[in-house]
Length: 347
Image (tube, rainbow, N blue to C red; front, side, top):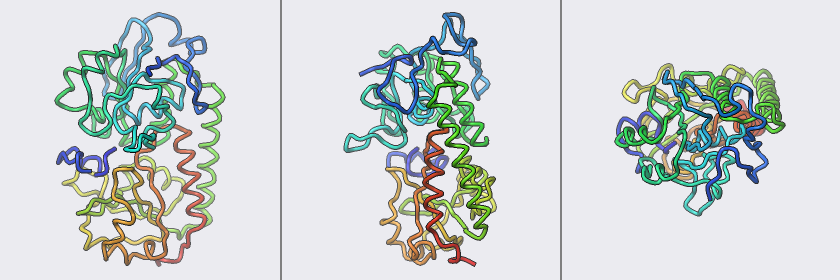
């Protein structure tokens, strides 16, 4: 996800500012199992017809189960944790130094093709040359595939069918389970040890965060992202992860409603008004493209906030993949950060 807020990006178009393996091929990664077709659920096994109804209500019907899947980096990361190995990815996956972008999770970027690494970049010719069976992407806006350029949609649709997974307006657990269901339909084994272990780890991390929230009800947490011009305070109901933490009992500082002109997700504040909300802890967007904490420190009003002065600024993984493994790690890190934070900065 680009550094500017999701729908702001879509509304004003400022994203620019801010070896192939098939689905069933073994990978060197230990984070997820291979999608060995011999272990596939009976509903998707064999060479018979394959069907799926995605979150746009679109019915996909193919003569056999897709083997060559291309996915947006966040979707690829989620599917990878459930056992699917895409042949190619698009969206943030490779950093400037050649390393793996956190947005692509555990995906081994040395074994998948790249058809685009930034917003607006989607090599349609290369996509076609890979002979894909299916494209998978998340959706923040209804019926809009994330990182699929509008101007190329028609050409992309003619090459292979696509599956959209809705990422907003749904509970965190439901989104994770949806990716798990899709992975199983694509031949992954939902009972594979890494998948089961990841779900157990997610449940344990949730329980620990719930215990912390119950023990420290006065600990106020705010979630933000920023650009040089504005501070964006997260509106809890529009973010499945933050909503989930609120359900676990965490005291989230959230605007009463999002800014209508921005299409939701955030209240947009000028830096002069960055002190409108205060919290003991501030979670700051950790995406590689986002405004860094040291840059934000140059904003006088921000620098005076209690959490900033106390150094209680911790990462928010805004583009975390929707898998049990991904969010287990996020919540374990969050619990460790909150354990060391004071809860008496804001009355």
